[in-house]
Image (tube, helix red, strand yellow):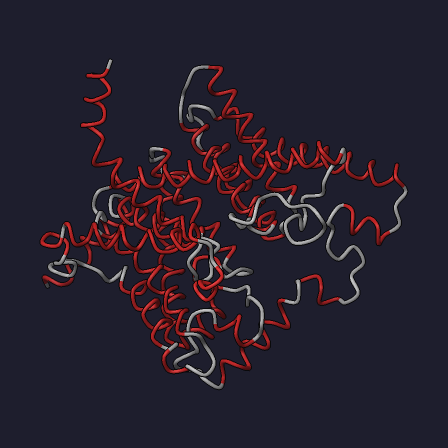
Length: 452
């Protein structure tokens, strides 16, 4: 038995070693470099260890990794690098406005990007990184969900998931781990829901395993909807339309029969949950102020029309006005927090205020490129009947999620779960894009013109 385990370890030790480095990139999430003086030893360790490991790996492989740009087509990857460098550098030009410690956000973004770039042509390894990311996200989802269920049992009441971590008296974690907001928890749920749904419809397994994955998919999807994030609910609708399109266009899918249930069941579960929640409110006959306090609802009575967008229109207006004063260079990472005292809730305006018009143009290119590549892969899968492995196809579905979320959140423009998933999905998509018929045809046509 020991020999078998030893052989398995020797076979996979490199992948385990490399995967461990990638998982460490998630360790720094939800920590602010500016608050380093207030951090515990564990938090300081979390925010620094990913960089130490990546630097160590780079130095260990110095000879093979130093030739990043030698005989390589980096055109699709330059915008990432320059976006981060521009937004980082401009901190030094605005020292009276921003903190030099925010340069660390740029370093944190460059670290995992270059680490992924080391393996840009190793599709199987990149898919392993994606699988590990999804596994880590599943553990986070399970941890928070168990906490919420435990609190509900202890308080003998159903807790509204909307605004759970921001409002009310309930704490779903201790002080060492900062939970995402309800919109962030919804994002985690929908990422897992999409990934599980795609895996289910593409892969044949034993009946009990299929049933387990199906049940898990609809529970995760239902929880994602129950958090009532308007952005994520719209993304759920977008994904549902794609699933229905697949149902009618891909007649020979292994588990096509699950598709309509994957769309309908999360909605039904969410409605059942809110039916019991509303009954709880009616039975206790609370007044509106007590309801807001007891179940953590935000804005039960909206005093302003602007509250519908959570003040986003006002924040966007302020951001544009402030950016006019430093239109070309911006104010550096976290400039929105410094100048408007809030998140700007938009990828493009965040890029504008941090790195000026140059960063804005770069993030637009990144977004357009990723949208184009994902669209081609999805078109190949849905209409041209091309078959993909589930870990090849999941990134093509996740990229639109982040692009849509970026319209109302800072998403992949900052170091976050969105960013880490975005870059790994971007690299996988680029490899798969170059394999499709349309890309090969366009490349051949371009080469023909050049030869003429």
